[in-house]
Amino acid sequence: MKARAVVSVAVSACVALLACACGPEGSKEDPAAKPSQPSASTPAKTPSATPSAPDRTEKPSATPTGDQPAPRTKEGAIQRYEQYLHALGREDIDTVCDVAGPAAKKAEDQGLGPCTSTYATVFQMVSPAQKKALQTATVDPQRVAVRTPDKIEMPVESVRSSATFSESDLGSYTLEYLKNDWYITD
View 1 (cartoon, rainbow, N blue to C red):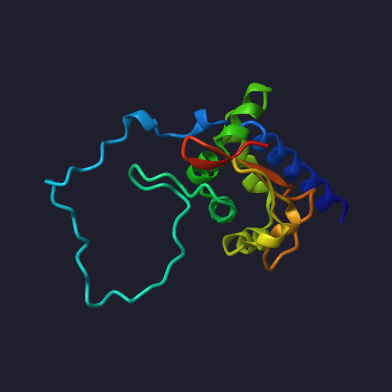
View 2 (view 1 turned 45 degrees about the vertical axis):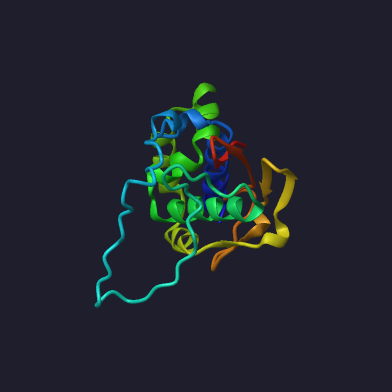
């Protein structure tokens, strides 16, 4: 039991340090480098329908597509945080470091190391049961606190999953709206 507590504290410390260190500089896209919107004379591409493809109803992505910014709403922040939780459970380092980029950058500046190596360590400290639970975790909007239109608090108590997470093994996060998307900044 003590070993689990030590692991939980270590994961929380790494996650907390990452959360306060990944800046928007950690994101891989340069908004200025995005292609411009097609003109009215440019024909729109229509996805081809495949008769064998099942009809799926999916939640809209919190990740902006093209020049479209992510929704600057509480719901947009929740979707982005759920994207982070699912990526954490799948060990998807690219998505984790994109969403937590601003916080990871802060941690790196304080000597923790780059996001990819720090989260590689975090992945090893999360139990298989917790990883599985994170892959389908959701956020209870009633427990999310809107501080300003650009800053939203995601307390650990807002995470709904098949595993119970505490402050020591997952932690609470602040998401801020930066460069047309939500990022973990603290």
